[in-house]
Image (tube, rainbow, N blue to C red):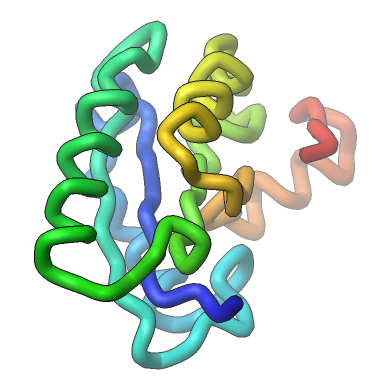
Length: 138
């Protein structure tokens, strides 16, 4: 089933210093984690709500109500990206320690298409290759 909506969930702590510009740009340019994403795909982003990520439940519930009320898009047609600031080691901090908990919330809310990552800078990728940043397998 084709993806019709992309949700990017950003780390609430990272959001205090990051506008999400690079992730949004990657989505619109269909780069990196968004390669192959159709031109007609809708996009929304929000934060996890802060540690431990429990706010994701209420935000997904709100999104689901509006999705059902205003569209014919199903949960199977939604791709949820856990932003790179959550899913990877980077110069700000390591991978989110609550990522598995957040993925559990997403699953409980009926969403199964979860992607770890959004935008990865060339500099961060180079540091991963050099072993300066830890790599995680999704």
